[in-house]
Image (cartoon, rainbow, N blue to C red):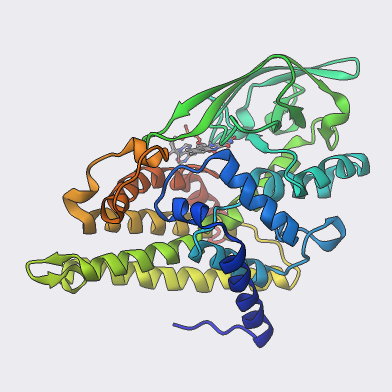
Length: 397
Ligand SMILES: Cc1cc2nc3c(=O)[nH]c(=O)nc-3n(C[C@H](O)[C@H](O)[C@H](O)COP(=O)(O)OP(=O)(O)OC[C@H]3O[C@@H](n4cnc5c(N)ncnc54)[C@H](O)[C@@H]3O)c2cc1C
C-alpha cells in the first residue's frame, strides 16, 4: 500500500536519503544492522554529525535551534534513519527533558541547558522509576528536603537507561510527603558528578548493559535546578511522558524488521520450499504486514491531527501498544525463521570483541534482539497500563 506524500515531502525524503548515504559512518550502521551493542562513542559520533547538519533536535522549533520540521517531516526522517540502520538518537535530552525545559523552564534554564543538549555536551538520563514505583509512578519515595539554597535528595531510582554514560539526570522527587501523592512531587535537574550519586549496572536478558540503578545519598541540588514550581513536578512528568510515548511505536524499525524477515523467509527452505510459502508461516507474516499498514495509517492520522495544532494524547498510548506488540511479533518470527540457528548466544560478538560470518552474525542478532525486544511492552509505561488509558480516554469505558 502506498501512502501519498506531497511533492515537497517526497523531495525531503530524497534529501534525507542522500544525507544518510553520505554522512552515516559505515562501521556504525553495520553495528546497528547486526544488532551489536553500541558504544557511547558510536552514539556521540553520529549525534555530532546530526548536530552539525542541524538535524539532531528534529522535534525542536527554530527559535531554540531545531530545524522547525513538522510532524510529517519527522516521520519521514525517522523512517529513513531506521531503513539506513542509523542509531536511534538517545532520547532523554533532545526528545524528553528539552520539551519540558522549553515549556516549564525559566529563561535562565533554557539558555543554560538547551544549547548543551544541541551540541551533545550533556548526556541526560531519566530518573522516574523506583523499585516500588513503576506503573504507580506517583507513589515514588525519593525525598528532597529544602536546606537553604539547596535540596538534599535521598532515594533510589531504577531502570535508568544508559545512566552509565550520563552526566545529567532529570529526576522526580517528593518534596511534600503530606500532600496528595501527585501534588507533593517536584522535577529536578541533577548533575551526576554531585557527591552522593552511585550508578550500578543491571545486565539484561540479552547480556547488555543498558539499564542501571541510581542511588542518591544526601545529594545537594541547587534550588535553581528545579523546573516549575515546587509541587508542580507531576505536570512536567505527564507532559514528558506523552513525548516519550509518541515516537515509541517504532514504525521505521518495524518496517525494517519486516523487510529483513521477508528476505530471510524467502531464502531459508523448509522441505524444499522457501519458508515464506509455508501457509502457517506466511499467514503470520501477512498478518504482521497488515497490522503494520494499519498502524502506519493510524500514526499518520495522529500526525495529521498534530499538524493541525493538536497534541497527541491517549493516541500515543494506542501507538505504543500496537507498535511494541508488532515489533515483538516480528522478532519472534525472525527467530522462528532461523530455527535452531537462532539459539546460540554470542556475547563476544554482540559486545564487538569478535567477528562472525554474516550468516552466524544474523543468527546472533536474532536471538539477542528477541530477548531485547521484551522491554518494548514494559518501558515508557507498561502495555497493560496503556490499554487502561485507551479504554478510559478513547473508548469511555
Ligand atoms: C529496558 C527498560 C528501560 C527503562 N528505562 C527507564 C528509564 O530510563 N528511566 C525510568 O525512570 N524508567 C525506566 N524504565 C522503567 C519503566 O518505565 C517501568 O518498568 C514501567 O513503568 C513498569 O513499571 P515496573 O517495572 O515497576 O512494573 P510494575 O508497575 O510492578 O508492573 C508489573 C506488571 O503489572 C502490571 N500492572 C501494574 N499495575 C497495573 C494495573 N493498575 N493494571 C493492570 N496491570 C498492571 C504491569 O503492566 C506489569 O505487567 C525502563 C524499563 C525497562 C524494562
